[in-house]
Image (cartoon, rainbow, N blue to C red; front, side, top):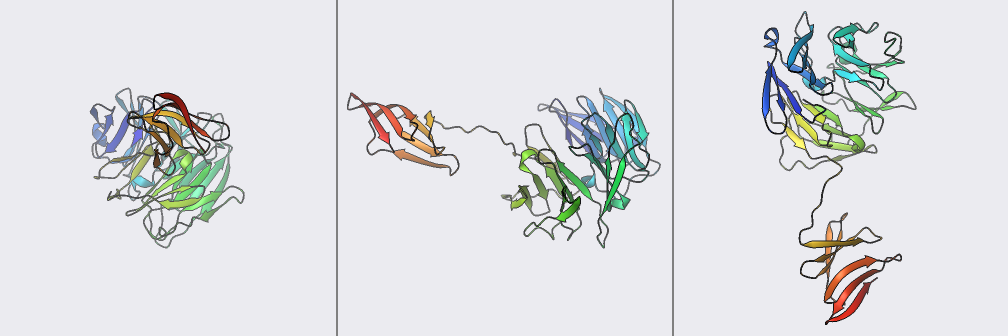
Length: 361
């Protein structure tokens, strides 16, 4: 799935993609020769320009018209959709695509092969330094290409990082631009996630309590909040290199060819093949409402002070989600509450029909 520049959602399945604009769903069938193709990944290249990576090749839907960008000689097999990050754009506008026979550079409507990477590549991404990271080597090797330029895309410095698992692996890379962090994981059991250490130019194992031996079906960068890591029976998140489990409240997480992406509002969309699609409310900004309360001030400890419609003085701690109603010593007709520089709370109004104030320290 993917979200376009206008906020529309796109989801792919065998034979077609669907778009959802918040009101209606529209189906877009693949060209006839791709009618049996199943999707490996979607990439919204701005507005009204969608790249669809399928088992039979690469399609582009632009202004409602399909274009075959590449048709594979042999159908793609053995690579799960959840292992694919197939298109990336750097800060200078250089756009690359991963394909069966290597990495390709997008030049308007043409794809030009990137010399030096003539092998199957299962995912690509750019970091904040415009280094291109590619998963190659049968899914076991991570390649870093430094110094790529749009004018000279074939001149770069190549560095490789190898990973091993006795049953074989398909690495998946996830990058968080806010934190400049690169995470590597795979769906294989007993293969822990690894985090890239810039200072030592190496990968170290992530210590995730109670999660190492579970399947890592997918991972998602969530802006300033670090990473989400999905398994068949657990969902954990990281922030400042600490991992914690999220309560699922009976939710059954997708686990078959899992995909995920973060929307512009901060929420995370996750789904799987023939499984429900969920939107996780992960936005960092949201509204809190306090019915029948009139806000007055915030004190030095961060508590909110209100006067209720029935004339009560109430404070609320947003961190602890704890409210206190004050009765003893407070005037019987409070009209305003202020906080002085020393932290004293002043309630002004009237008491027994005489102008009065109360203070709380």
